[in-house]
Image (cartoon, rainbow, N blue to C red; front, side, top):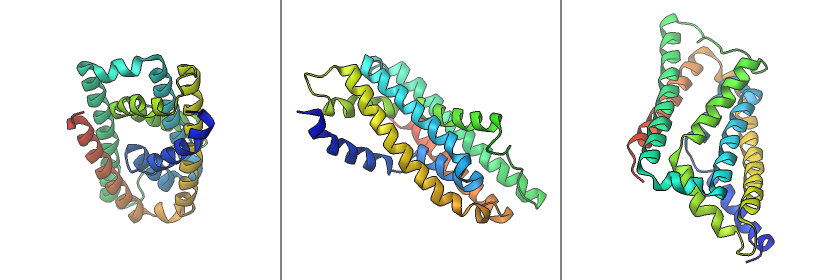
Amino acid sequence: MDLLSSLPAFVLAVMLISASPGPAMALILRRAALHGFSGAVPTVLGLEAGLYAWALLAATGLTALVAASEVAYLILRVVGGGFLLYLGFRAWRTAWRGARAGETVAEEPGPGSSPSWWKAFGEGAVVMLANPKIAAFMIAFYPQFVPADRPLFATTSLLAAVQVAIEIVLYLALAAVVGRAGAWFRRPAIRRRLEAVSGTVLIALGLRMAVESR
């Protein structure tokens, strides 16, 4: 199998995987709706940094060890599920406090501020790194596209860079579309409902991750 000839199939697979709903999509949609396109950028970059880190671990064989270890897999599952629950309950709390106050829920620091940027980046990275399903995915996905005569680490790193680039473009395009309606999403009543709905989705994803077996 030649790497160039398998690249179209790889790109198609990445696009289909990227479009599937999950924690990453939920985070991006919420961030873009409440903070606009610029507010979603660090979340997307954090998610992709976590994805690339998993790819490098897969190339070194460490991901296989994590996926094979019951203890490591359980720890990741609990940490990842717990973090999603934390984000979901935080969104619920914001919606509830805004409803009680009868006014706009408190805004986070603007997207241009350094603490807000790094906080959003960190949330995306943690959600990706603490997802044990990503470890299992890396083991099964990348070897299909690495020719036997190609170096594993270098080829996996290259394929992962292609995947990261594709996902950044797709996710930022999605954030731009959602961000255009940002003024409507940030209206007090709409924002409270969005926080409640996104909180429910994140909690459901967190519970599923925490209790779901391999």
